[in-house]
Length: 573
Image 1 (spheres, rainbow, N blue to C red):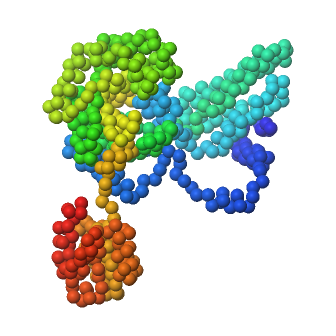
Image 2: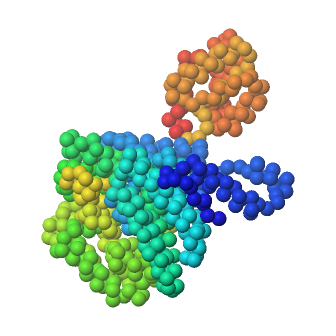
């Protein structure tokens, strides 16, 4: 069924929206199957669940997340870093420039949407696009389709001219191209009617597909994406807020959720969390690179990640006598063994040869081992820089291993690259990656700016801590107040307030409980102590404190109770 044509030139968007809803309703009614009452009730009771690739973080696990993040706040601040809090979404173009428009992250994995309120215009577009393909001989159907599309384009043109929709060169090209496509369709329709030929029909059909593709390409609002990483956002903020006017370098760190639509697996989620830091501005002295890495290793030690291994490399800079020359040699070597590589690696020979070195396929490892090493192709300046980075790490007592396969594929990355692996994560064991990116700020429209940074996969860090048994976090309450009697309740409220002000976690039941039930509840909540308050305790001003792990109990004056718990707290921790 084709959308009926409308009188006049102006497109009535509301009419089209009503037609679309009616059409969808008609299609749905036509495909309905009988449903039993029991099935209908089950569907009604269906529980909502977290979307695939996401999950809820619950106590007591969130206590570990808080500890990991609090340690980052503490360690990073001692190195002079300040926290930056960034938007969850940014213009898609920001990530396309920073991450690379041809990468899987930008082309396949980002959650992208248009920010606009033109719901009815979007519905009309959907109706036009889903219009059933018609034969070239069906002239009346084509005429109706052409009339509806041109009316729609006329409305879009009005919105475009008044800047209600983005007044961009891309949108203007879309509107012009649709008019040109219909001219070509009419040209081949005329030729077909004069001399029927399959070639004319094929061109007509192709231009019809092109019209629908052009309709899809029109943007009603800004194209935004949930952030897949945060370095681009930090650089954007550095430019936007003129941070180059501040004392250099500017040291920033962040933490929060990122989003990529990739296949969920162990330690990988579609909503995942990163802790990262960036140094922007100032010089590119090797000591800066070494101190960033030192901070990272200090953090991992403080958080309890034992067995972490640091790998480093230098990828030089983008010049013929350095990385660019190496890439040419690498590509030549890969061409000789192309037939032995998987399709992905074969594609990367042309698009980004350095990415072949990232391959984890067992069959490709012997081949990769024979490829040229970038260290043998560094220019003298980059060799000197790399040697000094290693010396600076040694001065700081930071252990490292060199990994010549540790590379970055984008041109603005240069010199130092590093990666940290952790036990308990299987073959995908990287928990942190970083490196120098002296060209990124300039690429995003800012002044030439030195830069280096890293990102920690917080999900994978947590998993590694759990796998290694280093993730134990204090659970339960410090004190459970078992009160009995109306007079004791007022004392219990006062005790809870004093204990909480002193930093203890306290559970105060809202209703009076029998003694046995109160102790049972305290045990279920993992309380360390039970503070027993009855009429006798209140009248005698001696409060009973019971150590639940041993069963020992004693009576203490109210002023001494707080000191007793303070003395015991280090032992419990």
